[in-house]
Amino acid sequence: MALRSPGSVKAARDPVHHPLFARYYARASVNAETRMGMGAVRDRLLAGLSGRVIEIGAGNGLNFGHYPRTVSEVVAIEPERSLRQLAVEAALRSEVPVDVVPGAAEALPVKSEAYDAAVISLVLCSVRDVPRALAEARRVLRPGGMVRFFEHGRGGGRIMHVTQRALDRTLWPPLNGGCHLARDPIAALRAAGFELGPYRRVIMPEHGPTLPTSYCVLGAAWRPEDSEKTQATVH
Image (cartoon, rainbow, N blue to C red; front, top):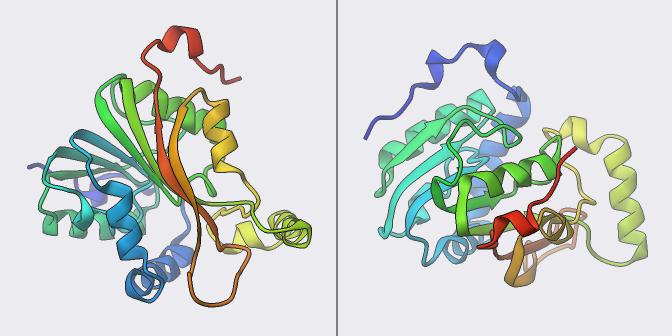
């Protein structure tokens, strides 16, 4: 298994650079594995996957330890250098082959129709262009290929919606690596031409205060077999 060294990629080529947020996220995400039950969520997210998988926005690689052994290969795309270095370390501990690669969700550096499944986990909130990122996910999936997703986004009542939108327009994105609170991942997947499978709404953490970040969705979608009739157009 050949892993690519993140140090071999010049900083100028990194499409995302949030070193302070990356350090905070790395610590917070590890704590969330047990305190918020994220480890169990990752198990549900990845259960039953097989074949070649592309993970878009791998972060610090916490998903790697949850892939079933039926997965033959994971190509993990991560644009942020600090998180990518942690992901390389996590890949070395993984029981399935993982290749960590620099790149952006909007321009995946892989061939078309090369993967059986794509994993998108806490990514759509922060990509610059959601329709383009999902069009890329469709491009790299074989017809009939699956998307597994776990995302946070818009939720709650009117007051919460107003709060989420206000935070999106002000301090939240620059303080949190470009994250947005009021995006709708289910609507975005439908608009990109994916066929929605089963999904469930999840509040994170399950026990504790409900925050603007608490409204999550966990589920699956498919690239249609007849891709020409349902191809989403990205302008």
